[in-house]
Image (cartoon, rainbow, N blue to C red):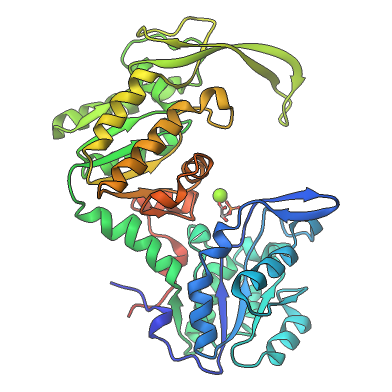
Length: 417
Ligand code: 3PG
Ligand code: MG
C-alpha cells in the first residue's frame, strides 16, 4: 500500500521533524570542512520547500559519518546548515545538540516557515542502538514526522524508525517525503512492469554482495551484463584462470546457480569476453588496514579466456565495452548498479565510462535509465553524464537492499495512506 505523503498533510504551524540523509562527503580545506558532493542536500529541497510553503515549523535531523556515539567535530552538520541555507534561499538555524534544552529552545523559537537543522544524531549512542528513551527525546520537538532519508532507510535507528513509533503512539502522523516517494517509484514501481527490453548492468567487487539482486532481477530482466571484480568469480566458476584478480573462490557455486537460472529463463547473461589486466607490484607501503599496498603496473588488454598467473583483472576490455554498448542501444529500460572496473584510476575507468556513455545515449533515444546509487552514481557524475540519465538514487546500501526486495525499516515505520 502507498505510504502517507508529506503532500497529503496540513501542517500549518506544526512542528514537523524531518529525517533527511545529509551524510555528504566532506574534505578538510584550510582548516574548514568543505562539502565535496551536495547531491543529497539538493535532493531534499522539494520536500523542504513544500513544508516551508505550507507554513510548517521545520526541524531537520540527520547523521553524518560514523562517529560511534561520540562528539567528533569533523562530523558536525554545521557546514551543511550553511550550504542548505544558500540552496534554499532561506535562513537555516543550526542547533548544536539534537536533543535536550538546546533542541527544545530552538523548536520553541521557530515561527511557521522557519527551518532548523539539529546536530548529528550519531553523536549519541542511542541513535544507532534505536534506544526508545533516545527516540522519546528526539520526538520531544515533533508533532509530525516526515522521513525523506532514503539513503538511511535500511537502518532501524532512533531517528529513522524509533521516532516514528513515538509520534504515531501519540496520535501524530508519519509520512514519507517527496525524495523517498521518488526513490520508491523508480527503484520499485518502474521496474515492476518495465518497458522491454529491460537491461541490467551489475558490477562491483563481490558476487556475494549482489547475488540477491541478481537472483531477483533474473526474474524480470531480458539481459544482465556483468562487470567489476565479481565477473572474475563467474569466470572462475566457468573453469577459466583468473590470475591475481579479486575473486570469491567459495562463491563459484552461487555464480553457477545464477547462470543456470538465467539459462532456464532464457535471458541473456553476459560475462566479459576481454579484460584490462595489470601486474600488481608491492609498493613497500601499507594501506589503512596494514596490508601491503600494491601498484598496478603494465596495463594491457587480455583477450584470452585465462588471465595469466602474475596479472590481475582491473576493468572490462574494449570488445566487452562495445558489446555492452550495443545491447544497451536497444534497451527501453536500464538499471545500473556497480562500476565495471577500478574507475577511480583513470587507466581503468574506460569500461565504466563506456557503459555510462551507452546508458546516456540510450536515454537520449527514449529509454528510461535508473542508476542504483553509490559508486555507479559517482562514476556517472565523474563521466559528466549525471544530467543525462532518468534517475540517480541517493542510496547506496539502501537502494541495494530495496532492489533485493527487502523491507526498509525507515519506510515500514511510515503510515499508509
Ligand atoms: C550511507 O551513506 O550509506 C547512508 O547515509 C547510511 O550511512 P551508514 O552506512 O553509515 O549507515
Ligand atoms: Mg552505507
